Amino acid sequence: MSENTRFVGLDVHAKSIAVAVAELDGTERFVGKIPNKIESIRKLVKKLEPKEALRVCYEAGPCGYVLYWQLTAMGVACEVIAPTLIPVKAGDRVKTDRKDALKLARCYRSGDLTAVWVPDAEHEALRDVVRACEAAKKDQRKARHRLQKFLLRHGHQRPIGVNSWTAKHGAWLNSLTFEICALQSTFTDYRHEVEHAGDRIIRLKAAIDEAVEQAPAELRAVIAGLQALRGIAKTAAVGIVVEVGKFSRFPNPRQLMGYSGAVPSEHSSGDDPKRGGITKTGNSHLRRLLVESAWSYRHQPGMYSALRKRQKGLAPEVSEISWRAQVRLSGRYRKLCARGKPSQKVITAVARELLGFIWEIAAHIEQQAEQAPEALAA
Image (cartoon, rainbow, N blue to C red; front, side, top):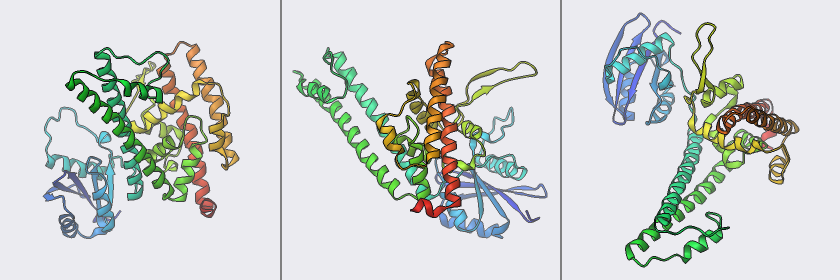
């Protein structure tokens, strides 16, 4: 770090950016507000030159990583900061753009900020389509609930032996009619929303498959490797990979568990340790995928046909890790249930340990990719 290094804090909004600079000699100044446009950003960089001396940071937020990509393309060092890990002064009740920018610059200079991992544009695009599919599934679930509650209010319940949202269930819905025109219109609209959500999911899953095929070889190898684990099919594997990014950036699985927010909270003092529920301060999308996958480990270890098919062509080391995960996590589930733990807490504990096996497989594949990239391309 040179003596001329300048630490720049940016408080970024949709239409404006507040800019503050902190010097190594301790001085701080508010530069002002600029429009959130590429031309204004170029003028700011030129005003604060030389580029090599600039260290820029801003909070992760709804504006995404566009500003990061713009600054790095100009040759400016930039980091995106985790908002929840920014130090907060007790009793501070005044918040302005000026104060936020100055605080960012000051804390960045002192090294008190934690940067987040920034994906490239292709990785971000894949994550967007995966999250769009997740949103479509939530919309489908809400639409189904609305239709079910509507039918229940008017005395219609599915016949005994007919499972929800099967072909027989669809045939039963087709047989329903309402004499009152308003009720028939409502019923038709609710059914249309359910069908529309289903069509969205089909389209988005096809888009995910296409995006994965065009992804780099290392990313495809990690996705295939994670599918060796029980409970993790293609959609879940892609979701986990796009949320975590590069697994080897975590030195050990415990740090990845902390990133997921699935680790217990703690408030200990002296000889009195106190642990509570999970922190939930990490990636909620990743945590949801882990919990959904963990439910499959309530069954006895075994090699069913779909899992055997997913493991075909994978390295023996990956299959061995998958079997160890089954033995360990299934036993863990039964042991915790025998101690009287609630099933949801047991599944959360299993999901946390599952992440350790996920890290082991992904880190192994990424290490192989670094040592012999041509093997993955083949």
